[in-house]
Length: 368
Image 1 (tube, rainbow, N blue to C red):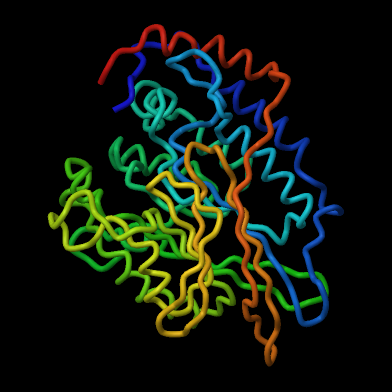
Image 2: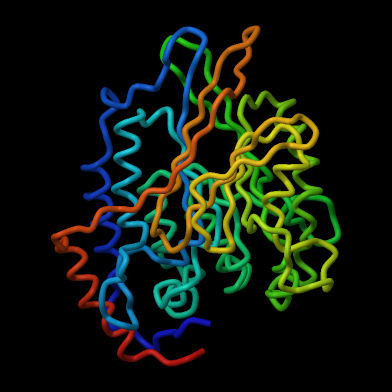
């Protein structure tokens, strides 16, 4: 568990929120510049951007060491890449997806869960940063449950993006506790819109790791079984492209052995076993995988797997090419990469202020 500060005599968050608003608004391209991509009458393309396992890294600052991280990381740095991709591809032809484990992992996350808590009305810095960055979805990760369901519920209320978790069920029922999926519409100028389905599934290990918070309240079922249930439903609902945003590793191992009937990691097996998925975005294992292709055993199609590292050190960028066949969009090409933000030579004034204010966190903190 991260160290939790004993006290903080002033709240830096209002200044942080204002700084994000100024920086992000000035960097986002105008609508005139953000023209959606339409190559010709029967082709189109879109771009998926992804982060995962940010673990409450909003700014590039190690509060306990009282110095910047090296290499640079955090949503503040990633935002510059997001703005760049939107400017280059067209903001309306891009989607921004987080694959989970976003609110826990630093003194910042612990402070807004336990001291100046979101349950008591505080604004969560991760939610605010993600709102300024205009995330479309976030898959609930296992560490989202670390602070208890009330904290997670308040975070979800503050988050503009849809929080996904198809395999997290209300206890004793088959009713999902979070939205299983969303279908987003990409409007191409002079062409038929592209409908992108995003399915969110998390590792079921939280049933063990956070049983004091979830026992008798939530049930966790298998990722593979859940994907098999929902992908056909998403196709039937009109999705042209299906993205599986899975908070799980690409392997098939489990740290908890046979204590649960479902494996901890299942990213690759979902791509291999479930027909109809075009892209798998993985997480949980903190691995940087720009792109990897596996063949679906039923269709023979290649499925792109990608994982954007951890802590906001890289941004995943997936380009998807499509072609209309008998009036319907079909994916013809996928290409993945991960990009690191460039080092900044200057420290913005709002970051300097935040560093001074939050220095109290590390100098007065204790263990859990």
